Image 1: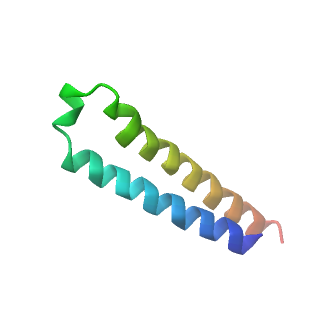
Image 2: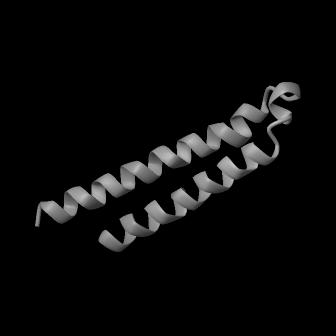
Length: 65
């Protein structure tokens, strides 16, 4: 379970970082394309939340041993 949580945390952190960088690179699209909020920052925020959740579960599992 620990390996799964660590892998999930890392993968979702990379996904969040990629969407953050994409949002910065394509920031001009925010003014012209209202659906870009879901594609760029929306997915990045959701991935970041899952990343934090996975790392918190991993940390809780480590302290409960």
